[in-house]
Picture (cartoon, rainbow, N blue to C red):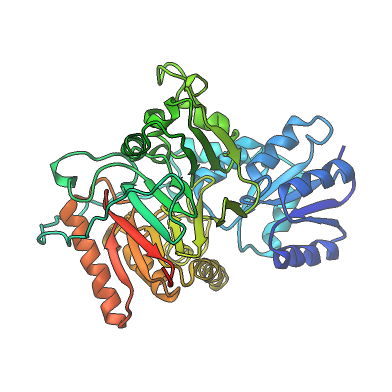
Length: 480
């Protein structure tokens, strides 16, 4: 049982831990520190702190999971948990409280905010979950945004043609190149029909071949044609495939039940990703194939995939060096950077830049202050450093500037901000991705032309394209 004024701060950022330690020590607290959830759980079970302040998104056990572990363990279930996060999405807040958190604080916060919460927790009246649920059921306007009608759009001509390349890599692969192919480029929901024929209507899926590996990024509806093409190419040969999930929202996993290679017993398929808010990756992925949603369960597939939860933010698949980074999007969502001798690619299909969000937040609880804007600037700078000098950036560019005004806090990018990020990071090629389901081919072409105009005004050599199904990007080693 937690006793005394003992408190644990769990956060990757040692600067954040240092600030909280100073505040709390001055108030008479004994402060423990941990850099991730796994280390934090060990300290909780050993030292029984009365309160835990835990970051939401961390490797090796995120804040959601930590709350579940605490409330499933009778010996520590009375420990109070304050989730701290750089994100203020209502969905994240609700999910954290449903997982067992007692309070939710959005960074940066002031000393008095923290101590007011500690006072409430130690002399509780009504749980944070109850208070939050009451706000939702009474239609609190601070948790929603009004949706403005979209402007009328007119066709602006024919989309720019991109040369398609032959895609016939041997089973052993071509070590001198990185080949990137778009199989699904939409966000939210598939959009088949004559108005989306040029760019395509399938949801998120990209195939990358490098260093003898075939890596598939996301398993939206685009993974179905990807699987058909792989089965035709390899015929009777065995395939070793790695599927990297950015997150488990429906448009990023919905195609896997129709992935033909998973029904061939010779193949070996591994799904990589992070655990979710309420359950592990394996359960999340399998649930969509349970009856009555699908006639064949994942376990009944001839080659059921091995599901591997990612624990570290840097790892390797074969010789490919991979870095993961949490994105600013509701739930547990990451982007990936793949580095090879032939080149590098960053894939971040769902992300909302922090500065734009903080500067126009619809949530009355998140005050627009110089401190919060400076904090948002630093977070965006960290992202810029992460994508710096990448050869190919594939990024969420769902809205134009006028559309974004009514979509603040939805977790998606604005075109102008995306171009700015790419320019500041010295990106070589920018691919606009996660096309909105309301955007037809002419809309996407119009957005692409605007992005190119912005680049031209800066006098930068950055190449801008809109991601299109069937298009390939080939990166070659300098001496190849």
